[in-house]
Image (tube, rainbow, N blue to C red; front, side, top):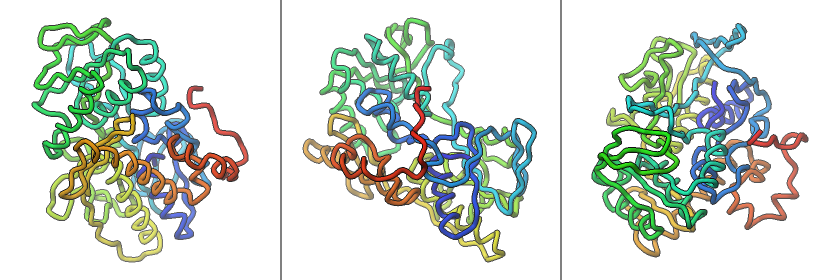
Length: 379
């Protein structure tokens, strides 16, 4: 259930085991979440935002799920799908804080959001991004590179960017953004949003407002046991509490590491958790003992566009001038690794634009998984 990073990695693990698997997804497309800021900002083409799920998995059912039981899901059209095991990977949605005028903001969480925002940013004279986390920082960096005449404001309520990462990473982000004439507002509060812009600490910042202030899982909509933050409670094998044949992985699951610390919502965790949940689902189908899953956040890689980025890998921070050339390469390498894992070598034809430019002719010659042309993401 869900065709994001966790869902496709779960499906790939199940397919490799020889067990039939169906991916149920609301849109029928896989959104490359780590590429969305580049698409929305204008440094990557719209086609980089998503691809049809049929490009990666054999059986896909398009539709929304309203209820999840142990071993079954119910669709909005009334159909109930029964299986030997279910893996819930429905992801997360942008948070909607109680800010006056929140209905005026744009969000960036899906390919649809990215394509729509891409058009709006291209027609705007000023952009106000609320939230200095990874999404906000990446969008500010991409928009400033693609649209040098665009006025960009990045508003963050805390004293630094990229909170939760080493201070040097946030400082590196600020250095790169300010070099691109992005105005960074730290320790700034949003009073309200209007049709003209955002009122920040009493001052109106005019422009298109994008809310990048976090995400929530809201798994309680499926009547499943949840933690205080709305994520599904799972055990050490990623099985949903109180269930025998239902697993959860990715942003929607309350993942913990070996020290019982909550892990953040990230593509890295989603990929590894999805694979592990898929493998344990196969074990459940075959009546085999489930394996304990050891998850941990290994670091962060953030591409700011313009061949600059930031990374924190274990104790190593790549944030200084010169070292900031490496993270975009790591970002592309991770993207390629994920494509190989979910679709094999044929999936490399769906690599991001920078990689396609390096291997244009070979990638064009490779056949697609399905003979039908790719759908237009804007349509």
